[in-house]
Image 1: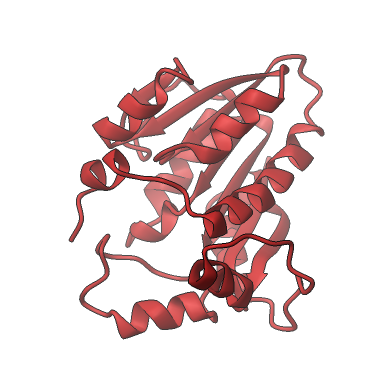
Image 2 (image 1 turned 90 degrees about the vertical axis):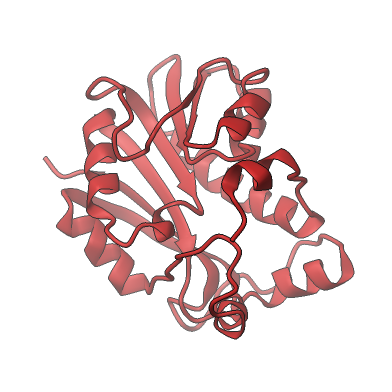
Length: 225
């Protein structure tokens, strides 16, 4: 199993990943635009290289960016761009209550067998009128098939995938109301082609007839008051 410090030390985004980053960026900006605070505090938890946070930081002047990861190497790499970057556990961040206008994560929650401590902490540190955006692997895609084929050899250890309804229920059960659940890359076909040919393009088909049939599912939630 690859240690996260080793992974982030040598990380470089592929062209296929850059397309996913651009799709995630559209979602983040959609909800940042709904926040009326002049200087919005945004946190990326499990930031890794922090591709989306770096992009937001470079394109928006109305944000104050924070990054958190338990990998020393990840934080070392991003701290020159995002000074408010800390090494910490996302289930016990050390931040004060109701601190952030928007909290974002991608490729994080699926690594926990018990998501409750993570979701509880996100609920504690997001503002009452803030947003929590969580992106996770979808269950019915070529990506999941790839993991099944490599069962026991998956480089980052434990990881699960979610259905549309299961993800929504999980979030609701932990004190949130769902604003939106959307998917990125139907059945992973476009991403597979991009990876295979080391290219990037804007796919024609963006909607799946099956709600859980994407590479990634994105749930946007707010506190249930």
